[in-house]
Length: 210
Image (tube, rainbow, N blue to C red; front, side, top):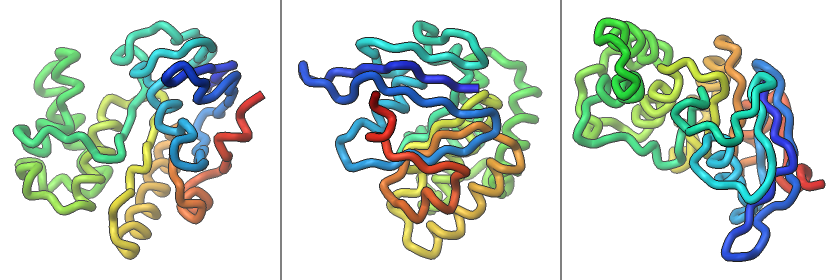
């Protein structure tokens, strides 16, 4: 499904990681752990097409997407800080990528409703982003990533900053959602218990260097 071959990324003339390789099967949820500063977020950004690699190849369904623009990769990314637009309401945030792609308005409305229903927040469609709780904002960020039906979903510590009870509840919900949809997922976290709960396979970034 997703194959990363011999990626090298240098930061300030020093190698962040060298010859990193990883394969994720269709429908598999892989959790990636590792110390702060080891390059976990950078790897996600490389896969998503938001970071320039110094070397390496990325294949999706056996197609080389190494030089493909981010918006044409069919890869969704949920950032640690959600990165929701405060001037747009919930529905507008979720449907933003579809609007950019000039999808028909009725189709956007349908897909947004479906995505919000998946995360259990269809009743908040018209709410302002500034009036969401922390947990609600996390769910909206996931809905926004799923609305375009990406081939691969990348999660960069999406539950960071939540209290223990809410974190546990949303983690279970997220695992159930991804499993039910068969979404191929790479989940970055520093929390080993979180990794073990959500993933079919847990890897330390340092294991991926040749």
